[in-house]
Structure formats: C-alpha cells, structure tokens
Length: 173
Image (tube, rainbow, N blue to C red; front, top):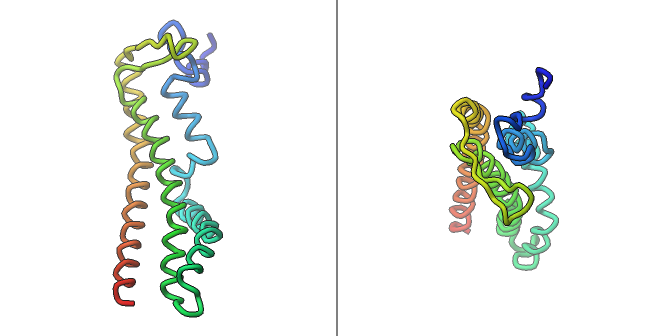
C-alpha cells in the first residue's frame, strides 16, 4: 500500500470491511464535490446568487399561476407576493434536498456503527468504527458538516421571516 492510499482510497480493507463507496468519509467527499451539494460549502455571496437564480427561474412557473388569480394590472402587489411565494417554494425544495443529503452524511459520519451492504439489500452488515476512525469522522462533522447545517438553518429562518413579512403585508391589502 502506498502512503496516500488511505487518503485517496478510504480506509484500508484490512481495517474496514465496508465497501469503498459506502464508507462515510468517501460519501462525504463525493457529496462535497458534487455540483449541487457543494452549494452548502461555497462562498456566501455565490450561495445567495444561486438561491436567487432558482427563485428567479421559479417565477416562470409561479408568475403565470399568480397572474390567473391576481392579474397584474388589477392587483400588482398581490400578484407580486403570490408569485414570489410560489417561486420561493422551489428554493425551499432545493434547500430541503440539501438538508436531507447533508443529514444522511452527517448521520453516517457521527454514528459509531455503519450499516453497509456487501453485494445487495439482502446481506446487510454492521461495522463498528474503531476509535480513531470515529474521532476523525466526528471532527469532520464538527468542522465541515455542521457549518453547512448552520447556513441552511439561517437560510430557512430568513425565508420564514420573508414569508411572515409577506403575510403581514397581505393582511393590509
């Protein structure tokens, strides 16, 4: 085994019987390198731009639906609030997907045991992580994964605040 095999190929099979693609550290790497799930780790300004991009594209669906109920010429504020809320629904769906994916990886990293499948659903096994592996995985959770959850929670809070503000404005129309 070469010196960097552990860092590039996961835990050596002599220590860990879990298949490479099911090892939590490798699941974390794959997730953090994917185009979509990387959104949770990118610079805040780029993250906000991506969410605004999804929101803007959501207007393609939400705008015409809102226009049927509240024609722009007659109810411009109600149209804008309804279409904005409908477009925000797509943002919420994206955030939920991010939350679920990162939650799965967080759970796999933080748990002291790993359930894995050797060749199919019918032969599942459980492997107990050695202390060194568990410590490493929990450090990754603390310093790499938890900040993603903090960002997602703040984003949900901001969206909730915006929705509340929109509901208050709606009451005065």
